[in-house]
Length: 320
Image (cartoon, rainbow, N blue to C red; front, side, top):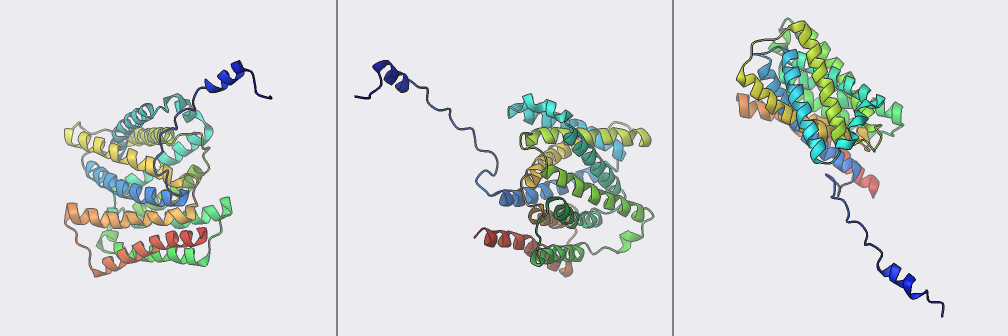
């Protein structure tokens, strides 16, 4: 009859059922670019909060001491997340050359940015750092041959103009003695951010994002100890310690979201969402320090929001 023997039929019936699907990762229901846009927006908000705490701590401790203490907390937090998510067996991947290079870039970005933050207003430094989307777009064109049309270039440039309207650099703060040096450090941060985010996109997909976060925390911590070797250490105090712990929690979450925002996406599409940091910094100033923006700043906020939403609109049209 062509039917298999009864013992073979029994073997088919008793075959074990397929394994249950794994839990869905964060932002799994979105396209890569949409995931990157949301993650970049959230990361920008978290980084502004962490920067505000770090600036407060730098008034009591040296920048190197603050970076080192915050880095220790960040490493412990990132390791805990790695073990909880079951990625602990992949921690040896930290020794890969590509992650070592990224950790060095992370440390250089943290060092130059936080040192500059201790010397100049947060809004002005955020203004300089917002040059990074332009730098990332240029790097993406040459490194990944991404096609960037005039509409997307116009949106990026419009966002930069809006950011200038919000921050309005060149005021009384720019006359400070160390302002030019701090601005130079900010430009170094822009270069480091562009190289770091571009490298993040090229990381192998088998490296978990939490492992990359551990490596980033190690890089920032080592940079802090290096700077503290030159600046020295101030007396212990509870308030800076608690603030460093809070900043570590926030920056660890921000680093994880930033890595998710840069992996497997068109960086020229996702990068403009970094402009949201300017809006978050203005909001932080209003809520914490009572700084109310003027009318020109609100116009800049509207331009930043429009320039950030336009690439999402173009991406949706391109998919259609």
